Amino acid sequence: MRRSRRIVLAAGLLALAGGAGVLAQKQPRVIKVSARRFSFTPHEITVRKGEPVLFELTSEDIFMGMNIPDFGVRSDIVPGKTMQLALTPDKAGTFTFLCDVFCGDGHEGMSGTLVVT
Image (cartoon, rainbow, N blue to C red; front, side, top):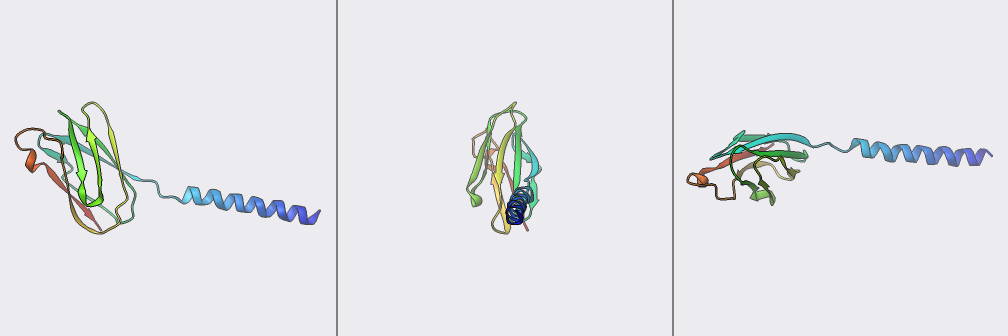
């Protein structure tokens, strides 16, 4: 009987420990980014290496894109919708993000800076 209780107690503790691992996972930091001809707001974004980030992207006028080539991630930005782009940066430095959908004259200069500390 005592052995059964120990086994049940041990199983319960293992189940709680497993649940704690799920709760301990980092929730992404949400960063809202607005795009309009020919700029992103904010223009500079600072995050920490290893920090999960979820960009919520909106367009104020036309169809655009957001591309962070150094991390191999991109998303369309559709007017009237909130698009999501997940990133967990694995290296520190200063990186460019840019619009990769032609949005008119001035498109070439539509970029921002991602700083990973």
